[in-house]
Amino acid sequence: MKISRRGFVKLVIGGTSAAVLVAAAWLLGTRPGRETLLSLTEQPVASKSVTLTVNGARETLDVKANATLLEALREDLDLRGAKPGCLNGECGACTVLLDGLPVYSCQRLAVELSGHSVTTIEGLSGGASLTPLQQAFQDEGAFQCGFCTPGFIVTATALLESTPRPSELQVRQALSGNLCRCGSYAHVVKAVLAAAEAT
Image 1: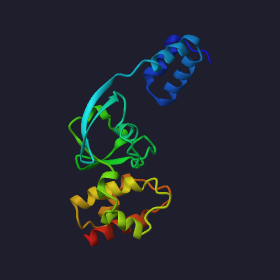
Image 2 (image 1 turned 45 degrees about the vertical axis):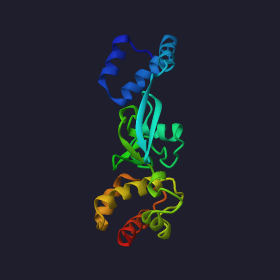
Image 3 (image 1 turned 180 degrees about the vertical axis):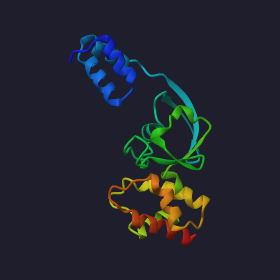
Image 4 (image 1 turned 90 degrees about the vertical axis):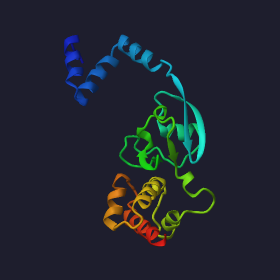
């Protein structure tokens, strides 16, 4: 594909994803372009010390400036409950509680969280015993492959803390940011309502 420099600039400034892809393809097709992109990706990323509370324990981590909270939890602290699903803030598999509120950990930079408190699925029960909500998920068969389950439980935990007796509609609304590719939604809703009744 031949394109002038002026045409290239117009494509990039145009801002549409298709135009940027075309421009990137053109740039990658030239040796100087490839060398420039490679040099950019090889630049070291600065690290920063971050101190936060994770599951009740104070942790000090050296994290890269571009590391997400999800990466810090899984790679630096070996907390694997939050899952890397879409990595785009859509599926909810990476949900954790940040200062008590459910957030997608793939969408938060770890360097921004000094002084904050994070609770993962591992920190909910505080031991080998299950929480009433976790037990309800088991009793109601509210999971199949289990990949999305931690995110659902963390989100539902926040709901039950703010609304101890939610309606079915409230449960569905609260969990609308969590996706289950196995389609266990009906069982998940039943489990949350059962946990609400049990407490």
